[in-house]
Length: 139
Image (cartoon, helix red, strand yellow):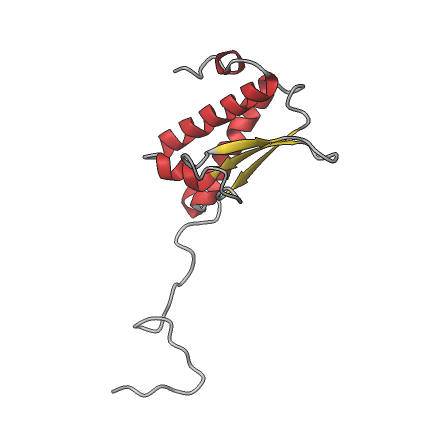
């Protein structure tokens, strides 16, 4: 049996521990799932903003893990929602990360669900059809 020297902590079986990060910080593999999800939402907001810049200038987009309250108790968990403007705060379109990730089977479907959700929320906010907000919506 080995004895422990006071004050020396062993990090793993061989005492070496991790020698450094497995990937450099700028590599896509070093981003967390939540950060990659945020990137997908930001990309879609930029894409929609190019076409609807003036209409969306006072709209705030946000990502939350799950809805804070349970308005869905009679139905499925929402993927997102539009929070109306009040007390000087702008209209907020909120995307819920965990429900979308639970319904998607991969990165491609996650991106499609985000696109569809944001197009539907923007269309509802502007009083238009989703196809007129984004012609690729029906694809």
